[in-house]
Length: 499
Image 1 (cartoon, rainbow, N blue to C red):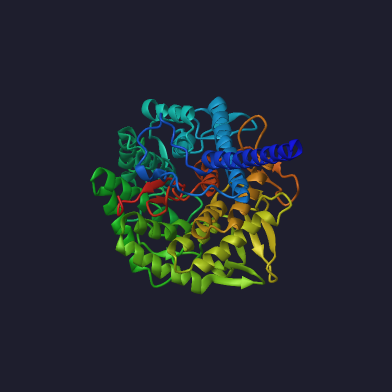
Image 2: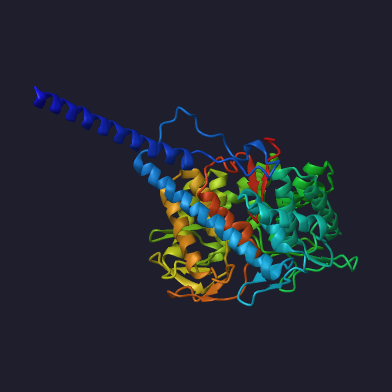
């Protein structure tokens, strides 16, 4: 009798232990679910973000993820946290050594004035700091805008439009803080002086009224410098109710319409408006096409949408080819791919008509990184007949275009390979571009295992490269593409057609 009772007690004990183990396992996965899978709210001190900036948490009825899913989520969260920390690391080094300078030389630990000393890195970083919840750095940047930012002197119209005006409009769109719109309007007033005629000046100077120059290296106006004003100018008109900026863009789009029977050329005579030079999708023309679809998505502009459809079809039917298994855009009969031209994959994905070609070209661009021993891309490569890639320019300038297209590819497909590519690129950047003393830098000799550090932390690295990498490891509810358009410097602006 005692033995029977003893066996029953042991059976009850084992069942109790098993039950407790089950509870423990459920508790662990529930903890992982709520700490990783459920969105955390934005920091309370960064007020004013639009409701659609981040999505609502999943329904409480949602099942906790499987062990494998939980492991993947932890990996994604880890990379996301690393990228956020790297942004803080890079910006704090700039604050320590180069505060208020345009850009940063992390090896020499000093600033450089690439665009006349306007604090370019600060303006370019504002929305990235805000989105990542880097409160202390964001407040310092905002105080600079409030108390010290001045927009005067010699001004490169294109660069200041996409970085300064774009940066201010983006952070206003995200926060609705009137300070940023006030400063954006000040910048916009100055940029209007670049329009003595329909084709704008490339360079103006607030201390020399009437000065209107083209770039020294160009024979006339550069196509992209004319075509890459529309998103910012039209957004400023929409935000302020003042049509002067939109009027300039309407006139430029009419000019593109007059020349829409063929692909656009590199140079434009500002007086005669004659176009000359190569027809390409690389630097010099790239963002003209990009801004047509982005203006259409920003405001519903019908002419911009029509022009984009026309040029997109020409690009795909006249340029796209495949060597071996390598698909790319053969521009001006050249087998060369510029890193700058890798924006094209993302643009085609945005357009939706040629998504297949966009994804294929994005994969080619990703291979520019993964086929090098360093894991870092050359600034340009040549595609061989067998589809292999040969380095042409053996430097990497912290450029964003490849991870930009990977971001659009991820949002379109959610194929894990895009996060895999992004993760590999991020690890290579950490290994070869990050300095132990602070910041990140351009590198050269990337075809070797150990690239050599140069000495420049590009402002676009903080505005674009880090932002796109970080976004790849966020949910789609962080800056949903139905509600936001990114300018060519990766500054997101809420759409007006869906506001």
